[in-house]
Length: 67
Image 1: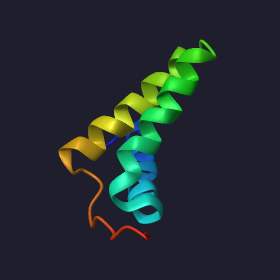
Image 2 (image 1 turned 60 degrees about the vertical axis):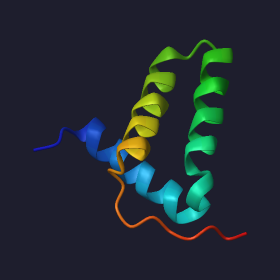
Image 3 (image 1 turned 135 degrees about the horizontal axis):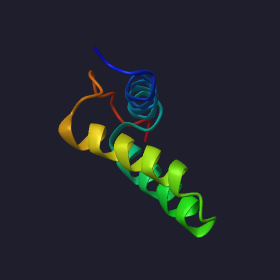
Image 4 (image 1 turned 90 degrees about the vertical axis):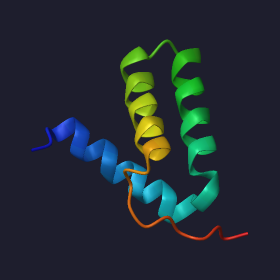
């Protein structure tokens, strides 16, 4: 069973793939970098987890890139 944070991270990863396709990890990395710049380490950890989910293929059904 997934906790609420994990469920939300997986939902966000799925949405990123739907919206950005192959560029989803790049978008997540940019968000993590922005969080670091703002010294928001909790948000950075969230984006890092989303990146991990994307890397392991945990967000099912990768969409084709819009471009």
